[in-house]
Length: 101
Image (tube, rainbow, N blue to C red; front, top):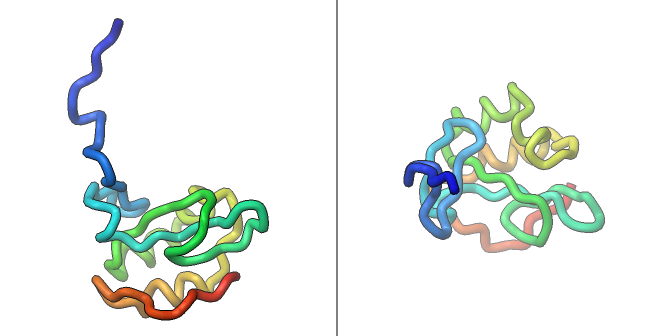
């Protein structure tokens, strides 16, 4: 049996940013979801395939430029999603239900 070093495993409830690869508790990230079964894209709500980004504008812009979010979600991500992510402030909790795209 092969044993892997401990740095291969993340602590529970931690996620990795698509752009900068930073590992942190999932509450620190913006979550983008491709909803199942409708395949619509949503921010922070719903069940389906998820991807996480830092609330840092540089991470969001890099993900858009390199198509990382689309690749991770296996769906086309509209530019409105990126604009909404750039407008969100770090640590801001969204009070209203986000729009589906």
